[in-house]
Length: 290
Image (cartoon, rainbow, N blue to C red):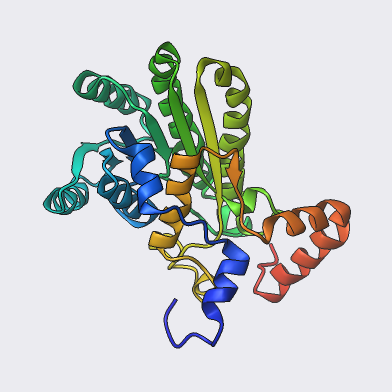
């Protein structure tokens, strides 16, 4: 967000998006000497998370498509005394995911924690999507199919060792009433959310746990193209990374922003009125009549 912020803005951010913060000491005790793979770690939440985990003593495996940017992040981590390795990969390519996991397990022997953070956001009306079916394909490839493939490749070694943790960096939008223009994005994030919750029931007995961070608004490159979001109270990438690191260390079932539960309850109890209200908002903000 740019411009002058009103008095009380930090409190408003905390009340809407939460402010989980784990101490450096607690985080270090939980992750020191652990091997943690972080997807989408070239920018934003993933980069901030990787930096904090490395500062706490974890061996961080940086995964994203942009090798040059990953190298810059890794070099900066190493210059500060941390340990980071770069693994450029396109998670939308199943063969690339298989090769990634083969290489990582061969070079490090294990992955103690997977932080599934990589994601693609698209905000577009359905009228503008008639000739853009690839929007649905791309969001599913990055937000659902790619993360699911990565989990499938890592789970056998985790279950064999009877140890592992998977952190899904999701969005609060999968827990609140659906909104116009976000169909492709929210559907893909919801798919992986439900898939992982089902899987969790099968692997918990083998020592593998899962946590989901239903992340509120975070001001990153991904949200920047949407002017409305830039005006709303949101977290910095570092504040968001605090929540992810809390999930890594504490292993809660989920971390959810304060506004989600009442919004979810209202959306379920008053489903039709809520739907009509959001429909009216869509029309007032420039719907296309096609």
